[in-house]
Image (tube, rainbow, N blue to C red; front, side, top):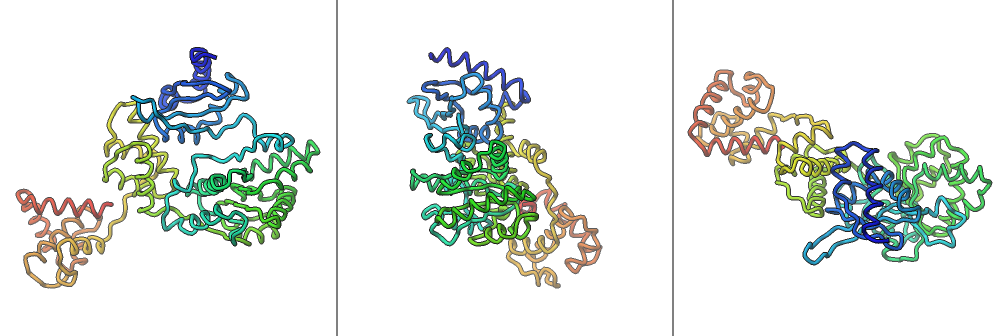
Length: 454
């Protein structure tokens, strides 16, 4: 098939995609895609960056793969090509997570076909940024990847809230195991998919093949194990698979949005076994980790954002990593559609659309401590009767910032610095008049206000 023929077929895919998603999403993510090769049932699309690859794979891979298989054929595989050097044509190729045929859904053919782990190849240990909130889980993951089934961490039970990186880490373990030992039979499957497969095997009276398939794996990674709740027959079957794999020194990696103790309507014998190895929590990322994740993703995708923007996103996208990824994706979309630079005003708009931003409550203690540290004076001096010039200046800065950053009355501000209402009012008037001509004082006040707002 010539490239022109491939482009003709790709236009049919484009029309399917255009009809099945909002125009803004289509124009941002799919209109720029180009076919650069189609050979041996492998369709290669040119994309702008790895960020675009990951966003399409995360959000649109189902509809994209259905369109490609419908137009190009069921056996078609998809790859993305990111151009690095336009002059030489050098680039990096990323395989799609979609497959023409899953070994899980065609278990009778599995042993004769090439093994497909169902892993997301984009999720690696290198791209799982280390922080205090995930240190235990990531350290254990690395040990497991080196010696699957041979550590004390079996099963490895990863738990935490939505979007904190459980699926990423689970896939990363599998990818690292395959990188170290390509012959390993690693399988990633969600608990819901396992349930549906079991139901299908029951209807087709094919339970022996179902069990044989799962007992043949070296590493079983099961996502969202909490979805086994209330499914007695599914739990019974999984229990036997679990027992076989553990006794055979095979590795199990399980993820859940809660601890084993918090999973209800699951057999006690299963819950007990979930706790045999290592339950490891991934907590919400702290500010430093969120900032590191942002910088990693920016660097990987060739984005440049100011420190002010990075800090603002990290401060407000505090629930999970998905919010951070969503904000970056939206910024890219807005910038592409509007052909505009990413500035702080655009960031405010995007962040407010994705996360609930609440003004951080700034306490008098924060203001006093920050100003004293900046002015190199003690809190005791500021709250005392000292009339030294630097102490008086610090005291007036505290009063000025308290008026701007808190909802306290002048009397309440005065009580915090042990001064009368009249003294507070005088300090505010003094600051207003001095800042009109004293650029250094004005700079200090703005610097301190920005520091306290972060």
